[in-house]
Length: 67
Ligand SMILES: [Zn+2]
Image (cartoon, rainbow, N blue to C red; front, side, top):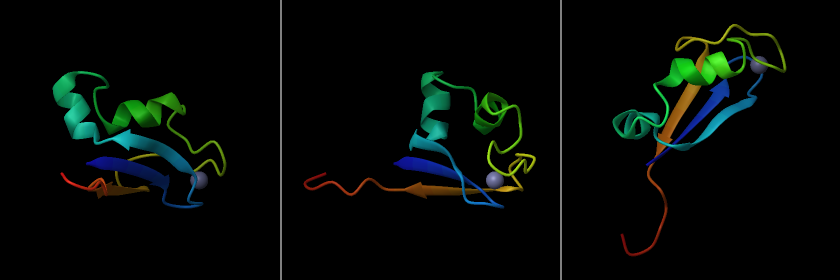
């Protein structure tokens, strides 16, 4: 599973990679709030305050063959 986080206002790509819940398990990054904090909790493009309510999170199965 991969996860993509876009700004809910302008669509700026904020995070793309391994599903954060999985990373949480692996202790790679704490949670989505760490992603927001990496941007100072605002969208770098439009200044939209970042929170679970103001972003779009998409979780997708990886489209690989033979899995
Ligand atoms: Zn934005």
